[in-house]
Amino acid sequence: MIPEEATKWIGKSDAGGVYEVERGAIKKYADAVGDRNPLYWDEEYARNSRYGSVIAPPSFVGWPVKWTEAMPFITSGGIMDALTEVMAKHGHPFILDGGVELEFKFPVRAGDILAGSTKLADIHERDAKGTKMYLCIFENSFINQNGALVIKALQTIIFR
Amino acid sequence: MARQLYWEDVQVGSEITPLPKIATTQMLVKWAGASGDFNPLHYEDTFASNNMVGKPIVHGALKRAWLINLMTDWIGDNGTLKKLSCQFRGMDWPRGMKTLTEPAEGDTWLCKGKVTKKYEKDGEYYVDCEIWVENAKGEKTTPGTAMAVLPSRGQTR
Image (cartoon, rainbow over all chains, first blue to last red; front, side):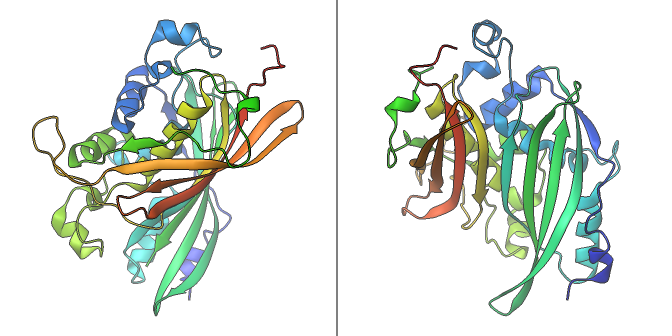
């Protein structure tokens, strides 16, 4: 049984947060991935490319959805945090990242200001070798300072 | 960057240039800092064993970023990645470190893929691909799909 406290979140979005895409953060990110493309740090190279300026790897926006959790002192938790708490309370404290579908609409540039928010789209119950698992589908979207949708992400988080 | 890939260069079944990766404990620390994912599952032995994964595991999102790296390297700066999805089916455990900068002996992962479909839509030249991260045993721990637009030789950009 999906906890009722959890089902009432289905279809709801959180207030989200605002994320500034810093040049240094892009460079560190590319280094952590081991991605050597100079588009992510070499200004001259990027200027001569079709992008005209330093961009972030497409995956960059896929992850800072987690940034609210990374800075709990200055942000209030989003819908994902709320659900994590509810599921733990009902005996499902284990979390696994089930995967994600990303749709890249627009390049993300150094200096962009992105507004992101998360919606709980659905919860499915699965039986895995006798234990119940709950697949929670989150829809994340990020909009840049010009009002353009830059990325949509469908994320599956598994609670058990 | 490498030579630009054109739509005419690929066929259904064409292999995406494989991208080798070595996950190390150090890489996981760097990834945690850069991504903001501070889940102790990826650096705390006791926490990892209490959470049914044995030892700290490689972040799923890092493997996804590897797959994006695979695609963007292959399609080149004039190609555009439109969609990418992956599922975290199998867990991966990082190598330790031998020195400050060198990984200990151990597994190497391969990001791989192949073209499954090639088509034209609204004046753009698309390829759909099957992609995956393969562990040292040849198991696909992170299978997925990608859709990209490539430049065409007939196009003026």
